Length: 193
Length: 99
Image 1 (tube, helix red, strand yellow):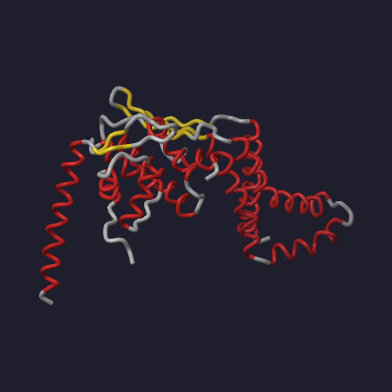
Image 2 (cartoon, helix red, strand yellow):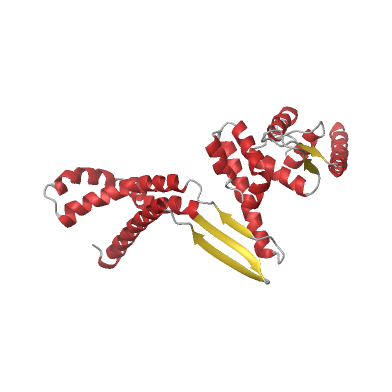
């Protein structure tokens, strides 16, 4: 298995587990072929350990503090991936805006066949609308930090995002696209246009 | 056909009964003697529980790989578990013999 994929899979586990077993577990993963069953087993087990750690912290008064933190791992790569995922929707919307809102001469005629082909398929339509949501998750997940700690018997939950410029670009782009679709759907619902 | 023994913790303990092993060696050994394929997450999930329970212990790492061995408590627990299985097995075999 590729060392990068192995490191990514190790990050499915909470930091306390990684400190204890991370290095040897990564070595084991690197020894194995990157089959779907190995990857899904590692992801499932990692999330199960995170889930147990989280429920321990929430349920037991003396439970350990929990931090869900992907540590900004490969944040730039994920931000680029998010932009790529959102790109087809961005292009389609930008061309539509140029043709119908700005009124660039000849643009409407030029893109009409492509648009009818793209929007004729429900699957592609749903894909174009769902891509910004997926892009947002891909961009933001690696920079999330959720911490649950106990202080003087009280549960303190803190939530933070470690900002990266490219992550911000990807997140804003995704949110703008999501906002556009939300407004478009609301307008259609309210005015039937 | 599914392997008869599928409890990952039990399979790991049986594997370690023949001597210390690191993760990949355990996976290969378990597959060889039982036909059960333990995924990496399943293996380390069970290994973590056994380690926390004091039934196995880590040895000094060999490079990045860390071998584990059964503790005396682990040997006792394995013996007890296999004894229970032997009892169930002998009862089952005796019953089907009369069929």
